[in-house]
Length: 293
Length: 344
Image 1 (cartoon, rainbow over the protein chains, first blue to last red):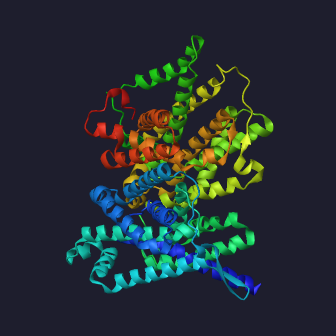
Image 2: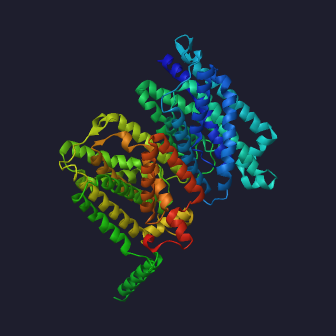
Image 3: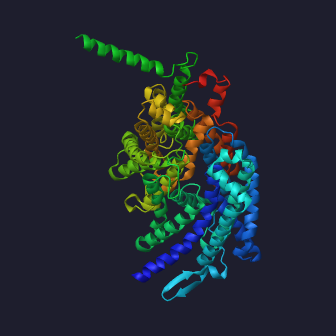
């Protein structure tokens, strides 16, 4: 019994590490730009395909390919921001409009990936992906553990960047109060551009890690959207720390549900959690505003 | 006696005041056009006497099905401004309710459609009580989550066939006439849905919904019971989507989660309203005709469903960026709306 619980915790925490990185970019972009980027999971899918083809064609290690995925995706983010989102900043129903826009963007990405790589299930299989460490009777899958450690390292780097660098301060200022930041001389448009690129780059990093943790195919991102949204909503929209915490909580809860009720219901945990949070505490753990409109 | 008369006077004054609030009908509009269109569509199956026009019948039926859904979606998304990406849940509820009754008791889904709509409407009311507590992006996300939850539930509920679904008996008419019951059912439902949206638009209820979409807090402080209005709008829109789903299942002769609970169905509803013009009566019709025609061209020339997803996404992005008001809305803004499309 106690062994079961330790096992669930071990699996949940390593899974949570992966989800944390997947959700953090989404949270950052929402905090700075008030954009709910529904295309974020589709971008993660893009990063996963980068890692997949590098592995398939050159045998490159997915973790080593992570910086490449980040660069490719961040560049995509820059272009998208310039093409699509910059002009929407003046729109009256900005936040609602951008949700629909990113939704359409997600479909475009899904269609592109599907047309190029077909809807076959893919997964990269470096040696560690199918291996595990044993501590007594508890096992920790190596793939998830490596992914979680890498993800925690990246998130810590992000947190340090936001906390101590000058530009990180500008990003946090914009998150807290856009107008005040502008008054103090922060170039808000530039901050938005860079944070969007960072956010999409984080999606690329998450994609490289996801490529050996979950099997993926282009239309799977719909499932991820809701999973990631449940993290972001529970954590409080826009709070990266909240998202990371929520990732660990919900991943552990989903492993728990999967362990006792079967794997089918474990994803349901996230969806139901999303509803319960919206019902009980719409602002999430760290959210301040009671209304998100 | 005197005070009783006073009360009557106040009520009459109140009523005239309320009528003054509802939007005035534009006298220049061509009210005959929708009626002529309806009459033409009702007479159209006569073509079957001279040749085989099954494809035309199918296309119009398909369009009418989406007109019902888009018009229903329009009540919530267009009037009240709550964009739901999860309305195909009600499509599934209606389809499964009527489909299961057809499979078990052999009662035609066309007869059951109003009841199926009602069931979907009640489900919509209950779901609305929860999800309408939040708005803006959070509401959109919760509507997406709804689809995922129902997909998992429907795929794992063995009574309704799980992921494999249930096959429904086809009707016994010959190939030439087999589509007609569904054709008439969808045309009549579409006309009904449009009539209801017209009535709502010109009622105090519709005015309240428009106020909610403009500024909910002000609407609340002006004395509108915003919560009840929103939830009722959600239930009515779910009613229409559920009704469409009921007949759609029998038309396809099987019900399966991956027919009803795919994201493309709900996106189409949203996209039709946006392309046609959110919050207008003619918008869903224009949008449905455009999207279905567009889909047919793409499927005929390029085939693959991935391309279809890509193209739908692209069209949606371009419309949102360049014509956020839609065809009807943009034309009306520039005073170029042809009289025949002015159904408001």
